[in-house]
Length: 191
Ligand SMILES: Nc1nc2c(ncn2[C@@H]2O[C@H](COP(=O)(O)OP(=O)(O)OP(=O)(O)O)[C@@H](O)[C@H]2O)c(=O)[nH]1
Image 1 (cartoon, rainbow, N blue to C red):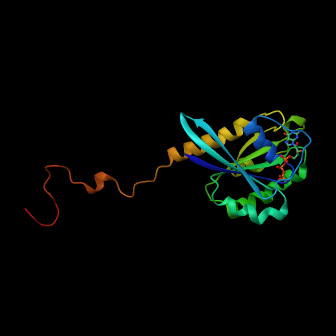
Image 2 (image 1 turned 90 degrees about the vertical axis):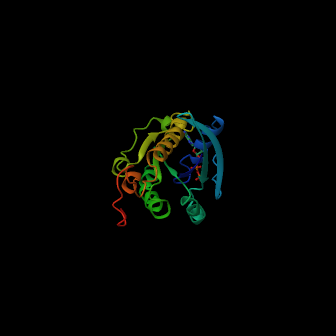
Image 3 (image 1 turned 120 degrees about the vertical axis):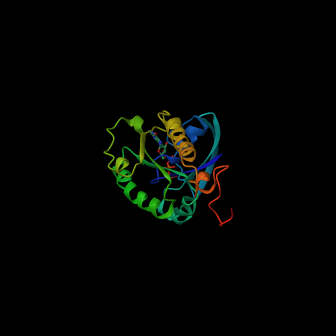
């Protein structure tokens, strides 16, 4: 099973760092080189004894790459929206990100809001929409690794449980169209 996930949010909130921590278990302090365009990482996880491959797209937060990254929203099954808990503007901008998500992503995309840089120990900002929109919320730290695995595992679990719980509804039920055996057919006027 391949699950496509995409990381979005303002430049500098820690999307690349989060992905590096998840993929390689390390954090390179003080090295900020903004993502250009888009990059991706594959990671295999086991969810409820099912092997799933998370394909994670790391997008550039900078405005000038926006049109490039929009093209990837459509194929995403899950979307991790990051803000930096020490930057109010990055939090305020999550509203605008959510608008973009609703415009470009699939209606049933799983959205997870991550308040990153949690290691800095600043009281998290109030998250108004995670209940309102059914968004899953977690605080993470790409630096210490806090909740990094949990964030991706939660998304994978949610996607797996949705695909298990939502089989295609049959258009008709078998017993609606089958005659019980030995019962004379009411059909067609034959006797
Ligand atoms: N203290 C702390 N610093 C972090 C954390 N995550 C990222 N940083 C730092 O924040 C800066 C930006 O991190 P990036 O991962 O490059 O940010 P980004 O969101 O990928 O930025 P763009 O690629 O421009 O969209 C870097 O200097 C990181 O070292 C964290 O959890 N804690």
